[in-house]
Length: 247
Ligand code: ZN
Image 1 (cartoon, rainbow, N blue to C red):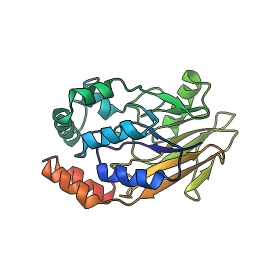
Image 2: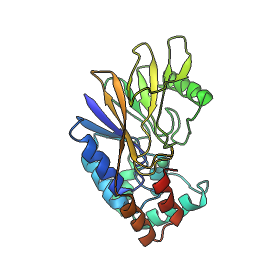
Image 3: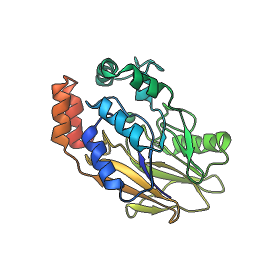
Image 4: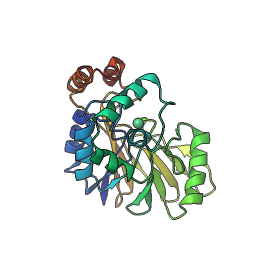
């Protein structure tokens, strides 16, 4: 099976459509790692497409805030403003859908879908100590899993844990990374709707279980159209400006 792994869509319809157009001919199924809503201006459309398209969907911290399952007074000012706006938009049915999304879900041949880390929707994994703890919690909570896909940081990366427990970041020499069968892996595909690694193109990944590879992909989309909708909705202008620089 080939899976498209998409994360942190954040109500960016233009980016989501471009990613699905790119992925559809290449994959058998789509897995969504959460944060469907928040920041951008098309929550209804993105929710509808995710419900129709994705075989596996889990909940992100913004999804939890949008359906009242979590407080969001810890969000920064513009995230909080965007969440206030998002909550005004959503219908009771959309809130109901977000409420029943699981926090994690297994898929494929021993893979776990998570938002922040295997143990916590809200945990940011950036560096070696973080990934060491994440591999540890994956081993404790889901010893049956060979690896995990996470989102949340909006920064694509891949880390490996060897049989001796040594944790290293895998430097992708090409955009396709061959997975070492002796290792467990934690993979972040990057963000569809608000990339933050300095590259404004929409990011996602393709897991090929037969070839045992992960391909990191980048897709151009109509950024000015997404920005215009943010301005029209009177969302914080910073949310539009950051799309152009991928920060
Ligand atoms: Zn996010």
